[in-house]
Amino acid sequence: MSIHNHSSPPRRIFIDKQSPKAFHALLQVADAARATAAEAGLDRTTVELINLRVSQLNNCAYCLDTHTRAALRAGESPQRLGVLSASRDTGLFTPSERAALALAEATTDPANAATQAAAYEAARQVLSEDQISATIWVAVTINAFNRVSIMSKHPVPPPRDK
Image 1 (cartoon, rainbow, N blue to C red):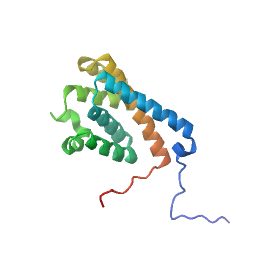
Image 2: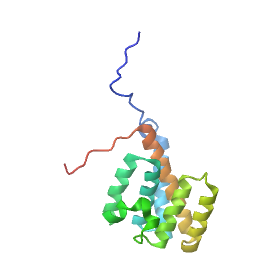
Image 3: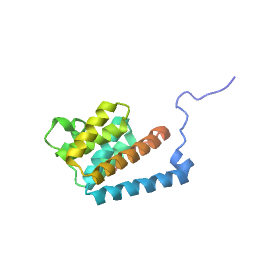
Image 4: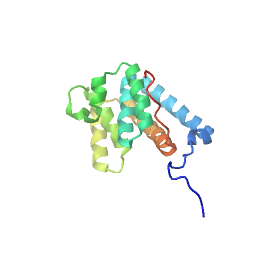
């Protein structure tokens, strides 16, 4: 007869802590992606919008919390953050931002070839090749971080102002 504590699920392994070399390499990729975005002329708010939109699609609470705070620090407005998931349906986002967001969405869910092709073609109309590449790299890295946090069940910290 085994005795189990059914009141709480078993703790997940924080894979970032368990395998720090791999996590450090991922951090380096993210740093390079951010630098690539800056060099391509994508501002910090656009990068954070990409991070947030991808995290919304992946339902990553930890990354949503982290990148909401980062977007606000970068000067993003609460209004635009509130409507981000419906960015196509509002005039609050520039054509370049909408194209970057659609490309990030297609990177997050690449199985739909038609959606991917449409997003890529729309991006080519308003983004440079460097910006397209940077957008995809930012989306790839936040997708990886989402999976690290989701599989580790990283907790969202309580509000600091309470």
